Image 1 (cartoon, rainbow, N blue to C red):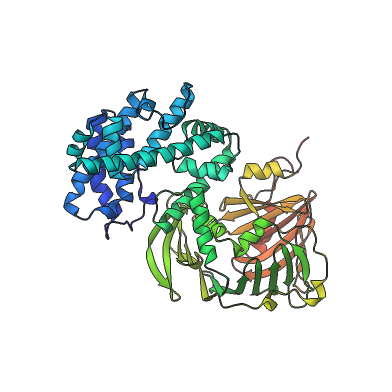
Image 2: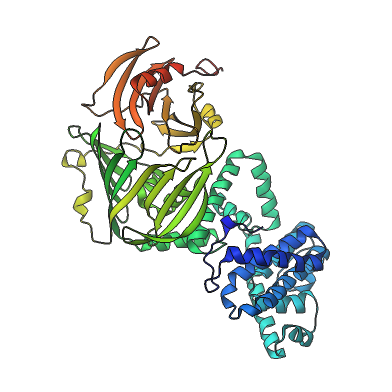
Length: 574
């Protein structure tokens, strides 16, 4: 069934509201299909496929009064096509010579499914001609009379429809010859979601999905990513090639950019704002600067996978390397930005508005509220139409209260940024960069955290907080787990706990610290007072290095640290 989340209100029908129109058309389409097919499920499929065709060709309707008759013809064609494919085994007889098929039942079944999909891609007038003449077996004169067109016009439509089918079924033959070539899983998932896999490939993938929970999670991520792209492009079906082409089109518009970001945390005694500046130049030059209220200045310069980081005004810059995924997450790949936006959310396009003088898509993202019995946390994001950059992001808790706001100001494009902006400091420019070590965290489940760590992970024993998200990252070959705990209904973490068998706290010199004890263990406390992190504790327990930061007083942080426990005593057996 077509749903509100998978359609775009802005349709090619001269300002028609598709969702409103869909509510009127679907019952009528279902009734037409049911009269022909006498099977509720098949009728629902036929009605949906017909409405997809109506959606794609709505802009061709010049007279609103003609819409009911046109709908009747499109739905009838789809129903007759479905009837022929599902009730007769000899579909290949009607297209004999269009492709080479054997007598193998599995291959014939696959071909029938391919034939049905190919037919559904034809323009309505071509599909109607092929259905009447090649599927239903009507004479050309009778088909012309039924369509209300001259015989010559019907013959022309039939010829063009057949030619289109030959090309589509030739693609099927090529795909059959290429079955030994392993396609990227992302392409398979996209084609599965858009209904483009043949019957054999679809059955194989569904078997994999049943056995692989991680693959099912990737499927859901791709589903939300597609929903977002459908909204932005106005299309309700996209192939992986079309997606790559669209992202490439967006990327091609940009040679360089710069902007200023202001992120404000609403709440507490007073709002807090963190400001940072970003510059980017193709193909892979990036510079980011920020001022942290505790650590002082922060500067990162990236040239390809080589990078230099400086934290604090007095610290020496450090030469390092970043892996390809980390590079993408730093703003070079706009497709990664869209995936991050859509992950775990249901997306809807609310329209277009101007932000900071630029025309933007206004998106609403909804997600189940962490720990809340009812309600959802929501985000409103305004994406620049040209670059797909988020220019304004507002996050609300489950009660509809704004908790965070991030705005991009002074966005400039293609100004010819000088290379000198991205030069490494002289004191480290000649140093050899180490092997790639800076990697982005990977979202995962608690079960995956337990499987990855060589010890039983410590968990926070505070019933007022909910474990909302888990991440794993690799640090010099050793896994580090990061657990985010939220207050019920709050989209932002209240406490973040990291743990590993290696020391993973890298504080710049000069940061004020206080030594203390937690259950007889030495600990270091760092006051933060910024962005929902009032303080930070670093300590070691049972051979595990633990870092705990949160939106609480020093006493609350100590209480949280004291409550940490494992289900298996801290060490894995065996």
